[in-house]
Amino acid sequence: MRLLPTLMIAVGVVFDLATPTAVSAVPLFAAAPLIAAPFFSLAATIRTGVAATLVVLVIRVSDGVLAKVVPITDLLTLITVAALSLVINRVVWRGNEQLASARVIAETAMRAVLPVPEDRIGGLLVAARYEAAQADEFVGGDLFAVADTPFGVRLVVGDVRGKGLDAVAAVAVVIGAFREAAEQERSLEGVVQRLERALARESSRRGGLDSMEGFVTAVLAEIPVGSDMLRVINRGHPEPIVLHADGALDVLTPTEPALPLGMGLDAWPDRSDEWALPSGATFLAFTDGLSEARDARGVFYDPAARLRGRLFPGPEELLSALTDDVRLHTGGRSTDDLALLAVGRPARGQPARRRTVKIVGRDRE
Image (cartoon, rainbow, N blue to C red; front, side):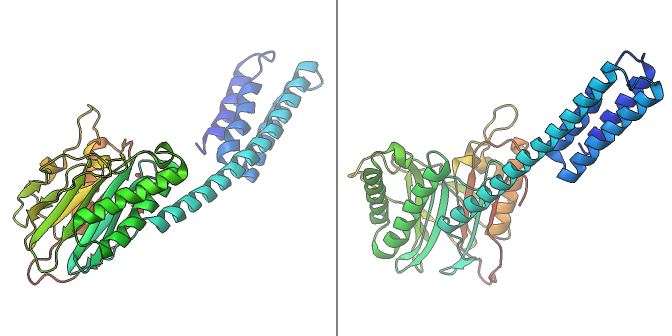
């Protein structure tokens, strides 16, 4: 792209010298500053416009036709286009600056409402990952949170229908309600009902479900203190997975399918399912950005099939391998945000591991 303006001028020179004087290559010369305007700095755009004008001026002088009407018109046209290129350059760069500012604000807002769990909570190893579908995009409706409570480690992974600031507002409501309820409610069912009521209150305050993005799919889990078991409630969310230390894998299919949160079902009879989470096992929850990722043939990504039989040193390594694998599956063409949360029970004698939570775009960290 940086060579294209120079190439346009060079092609224009060759074309002008190889054709009769009556044939003009001014459109090629005029294209050079127009190409430079949205991609180059102001100084580079000026240099490109001046270079194109000087080249045409030298060619017309060498041809001895500078004083004629058509060459003068060509020069005036080129000068006008070069001046307009400067205006375009300023407009594009100002828009880029505003967009960069908006991205910073969006990232700050998302980081404020999306909790960053510690790498070790309640004796468990924790890793989380959020990846936006588009590079440099940080506003979305995927969420995760982990809390160490008197009843054990509790966690939630969810996905708000929709995107943008309304989705972020719904994420804030769910995360805030979860943090409070996780500390106070004796049962996981009670936590779910608190989230349901929080969404109903916010929906009423905002004047309807549509303004609150309608509903939230979610998986809530509880790992009681001193227990090798796991309680899970699934409200219309992709089924989580437990990976065992020997490579075996359990897909946590709920006993009774349930609708998402925020559907207006205040009396929904939530019932948790219990699963084994022995030493060395890892609980993995994710949003549909993973399970609905497609390859070029339209085949969905199957995390259970891709992970079965594989071994990972810890939750962070699991998430790194998983995100790399889904990128390979989609060829980098994912269209939905992706949130992952892995909570592992350390194997006996396993030391604590440090890691960094990543909130990234698809193309860069």
